[in-house]
Amino acid sequence: MKLSRYEQETVVNYNAGELTATLYTRDKAVMRKLDTLVANFPDTYKLTGQDEVSKTYSFPKSYVSYRKPRAVSTEQRERARQMMITKNKAKSD
Image 1 (cartoon, one colour):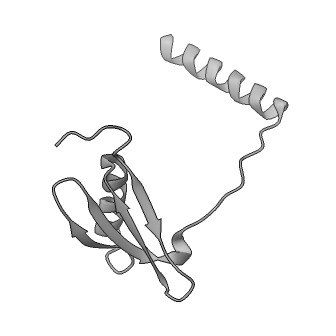
Image 2 (cartoon, rainbow, N blue to C red):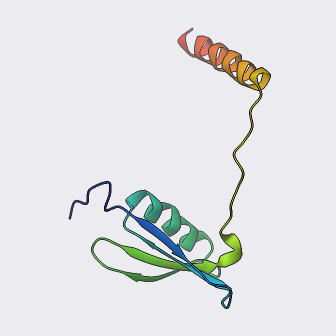
């Protein structure tokens, strides 16, 4: 079944009273990432349900994180640009 981009949702659910979070997704990219985690860390990540278009996983809620945006200075941006130029020149030679 082909889902629209809008229908490819991911929902993370947890509360203060429990130690685990539940992640429901219809996004194939998220499923691939979580399936890899389930395979590599079966004691931590669990596949708890699935149907033809979605999967549900559980894992410790401490693994849900919030990050502040990365601040990149003009100098860092220019250095990265120069590195990419050098890398691309080396590939084309």
